[in-house]
Length: 329
Image 1 (spheres, rainbow, N blue to C red):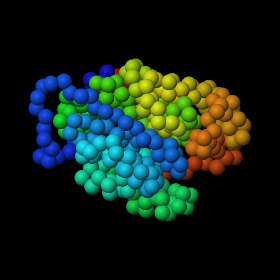
Image 2 (image 1 turned 135 degrees about the vertical axis):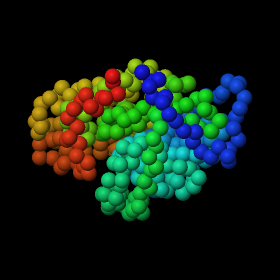
Image 3 (image 1 turned 90 degrees about the horizontal axis):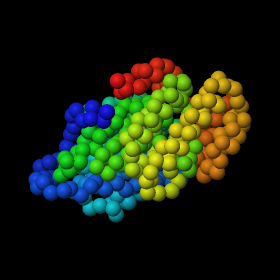
Image 4 (image 1 turned 45 degrees about the horizontal axis):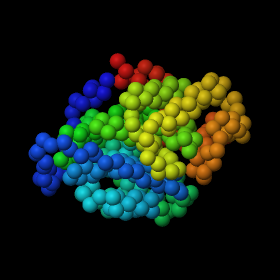
């Protein structure tokens, strides 16, 4: 199925500024390393991909200090130029600190899918206004960087055209229009928020229709069929190797439970307290501050009389599972 994604692509970075590799010897596989932005940045996982001549970063954290920490970490991991940064979807914990990160890499181009760019354009100012009083105005940019729409279905780092990175998009994860990054040479999947670490309760507040939940599960089925050796989740407590599929399987188990024990009961079946107890009992031990925050947002959003999460796009219109899964022919 994935051969259908290889229809067009782009060689990232300036080919005039960087020497091109022309020999046909076996290439060193692209190297992937991960960085977790803890604290106010919600344990979001960023991925650094290092090639033979250049590097790129996927997902940029929420806060200014986290973005600066990520930039400093990148510089300890490679001396190759960072030619691009990507955001996988339009949740602010994956893009809002981009401006602070890009200041450290002024030659990097910032990308996201066209659909994600549309969402970021709609929401960025409101998200800055929402988070600034919570975290502090010194930690939240007031003028978020808007990515350039990336219109291709794969990409290649300079010197590594023989190892294209496939962009699997648009898929439903914990929201609509997510982009996942597949490195077939090493069978590494950078899954964004389609997969959560087993250390965290997933963010469920965007699952406003049964079709969205079902489509997220279909995404996970697709990812499992790839047989990945490494699955990098969107949020994690520990910077593990992420080898294997345990986090993918955990996320699928969580969603299946949600479908039958929460969603199928109908709106406002549980109070927030009852829903918290239900999810905490079924998936115990996930009591880090950020996991608790994600769970509390979920139970308030779906619990009877709870405080509803602010949405700036109408997700209730996504009721047609066939359209959401149009990639499946």
